[in-house]
Image (cartoon, rainbow over all chains, first blue to last red; front, side, top):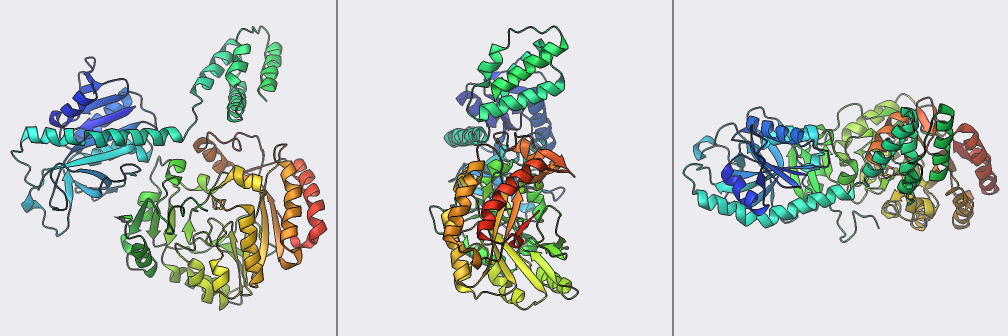
Length: 274
Length: 337
Ligand code: SF4
């Protein structure tokens, strides 16, 4: 599953439209939009709100470590290196309040620039930043990093920022901002695909086998220890390229009345799996 | 050729993290110059990146990053019991690098470290001071490449160049550098020194293909070992880890015969022999991060917190292997655990 957090409706609406997300009417605390693969929440501005919304999403949808959490939003910069509307992948987040640094792994977007981002609890204007260093500023990334690192693999928490202004974050043209998001949707789609491939490549799923083992162990009254052993043998058998599900299936109609018989059936299954 | 060197003569890391405190060291400056197009990220402490929770070892291994850091004390550790000491009681090891550019399925580092990124320590003078200090009190056997492969890393940071004169100057020190690398440049550019042993870890090609991803083939390693021998280096052969099972047992006899048809047994210092073994804690961690590994699905017997093959099986296999090995080399030159 892909979880997206944006601070504002303005940032979310082009994504809602592109991915054909529908509002989840059962959720009242947040505005959540989803399809079968993506859930998007509008968090409100600031790192506490973004952390809360991200955790809400990850817990409500029972996230797994292989799921992906993406923060998409605007950032300001004092750097003239980038143009308005440009998409940046963040490889370091600095919390301006605590001095703590976060390091998202950025294993996607080869051609997208990578930068450090400062996360502030209030909007940063030109006159607030005196350092002579090019920097990007936002207000949500720290919250996303805090939430993501608790639930997901490090490479699955992603901060994507689009340059909205040169530290003049007032009276920005809303339509233009929406266009910045819209223009970057092809890159965002590509990034999501890359992340999905990365997660898929790292595992063989044993979910189906686990389900079958659970069912069989329940119907044959196997103990927990037997279940553990059986699952291990099933895994081995699948890794060797055999088809353990068929073997489990052959035993699914067996009935076991006494313990001794159960043990014998168990041994038969193990034998067949080898 | 190693995955990280393909497509280019230059090693390419996904990102290079540099500790603020490491910025002014010569190694760091060289790396920055060499990889100026890489993604450079300044960090406060290497553990802020290396020790993050929930890193995925195998995804990271495919996108390995380099972290340049300043190591703090200690620089030298007492050798653990699961490693061979080749008869030396004052056995120490040191790690200039954490992790390795290779990706062996059985590597215990996966269970030891939370990250597969490579940490390279840049404050080599501090290592030298401590090594000098311990050798001033006693004769020392120092394993300098146990938790990594220094020679495979030589084109990135040539640690052995930096330590060559230093090692040479300490008669009380015997250094072992263990490798699976086919990189011959060190042997070709340096004169052999008496107190340096290069230990080549060799396995049947079938085992290399099965378990030692992105490492050089047996022939490439044998070629490097022959170069080292011809340049006068003391060469040790490490047959470690040995695997046991109906699917692998038959690989070893032809392998030993081939090995000694290529390398004259009189030219090697000795042989280190050891079965696949791993601490129970590391094993459990690796079992989780390598759910696709048959090696970590197997049952092993547990003794003193270490998982390995049952001792009667080890004895049986070892006897068989020794019968072949001792055709070529004297038993007192074979060290086993
Ligand atoms: S060469 Fe050694 S250190 Fe490197 S991955 Fe293989 S076993 Fe681990």
